[in-house]
Image (cartoon, rainbow, N blue to C red):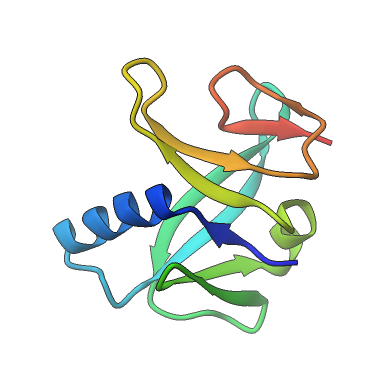
Length: 108
């Protein structure tokens, strides 16, 4: 499996990357312990992967995920919702058994 980005997610990321003049960077997706459900998702930009990263490409966006986070994110699709109440990036993670209401943390 891999990490993917939906078309809506890629469109919003592309807009952000162009606005911040970082179109040549990688999108770094990672996890940190905490949050109301156990793990928090994090998004950031990085110049290049390290020896501890998996590298993917989806919708023309280069993605890096550290090996530890990948164990819990394998198969995740990053989406974007532009609804009035729930605007923001959404992580559709097939491994997650529980999730918080805001969608930024999950448990297994």
